[in-house]
Length: 330
Image 1 (cartoon, rainbow, N blue to C red):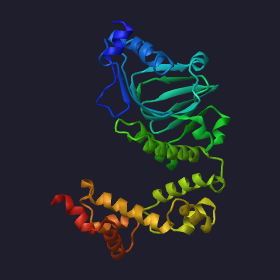
Image 2: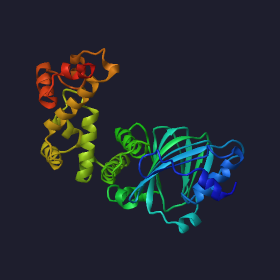
Image 3: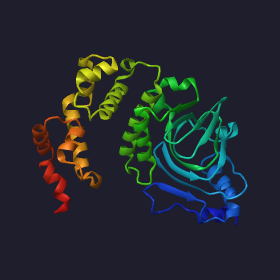
Image 4: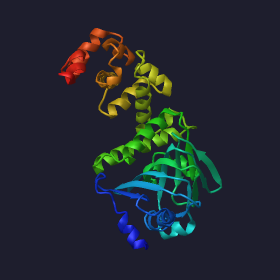
């Protein structure tokens, strides 16, 4: 089967979301899969070189574009892909590649640096520098390709090195991972506007996660806001969450904290109350949490006054918590 025929066999899947393409080795004979992936997909579509070990090979990519942004979900058996200086000269890529490892392990090499990337970890690599990525045991990963300018203006310190690893333990990494999955999944947001906003938030989170040697109070205001929101989300369950506690954590004044919330059109108290009520509303309709009393859910999300909780919930959703929980049963 020649390349042109193989391209016709694996055409984009029209059932995928708008502007998404799906490439897979499934319809290709086993002995031709490696050559197909190397010649048709990696060389002609993604402008990288590929080497696959002898034997069975399989791979699948769901990719979509939104303006200059690119996103993909990738599954594969073991192989290695390389972006050489020749590849870069043939198709300059002034971007960062953000990889969220979901399953399996990969090893990245770039400009004399290397590390293994395990599940739930994120790598950031410079598209203008040659690199090698080796998939030892295959696996699955989500990838976001973002113009350098979007990242550099938030995290100029990333220019110091072409390759970075963000450990899974950081709460910012967890939030960044959720954003990458939302952008790269086959159920990704459809509109360019929504994609752009989510990507802007992702860039903020990547900056926060990589700013390990920078005091939070010295970050740009928009990054301070993202850091504040991430910390508050992580501590919504704590009834003692207060402006003073949050300000102390970030080494800023309470006045500055209130100013940051004002910049997003909120007050600290209203934002925290809204997020707690939304979390309770979701929990009340979760089948796995039916065994919990309404009071248990309220206490779990930081409320310590049931009368206040019931009043605030009804004002927000125009139903009592009990009516909200059982509404779908009617």
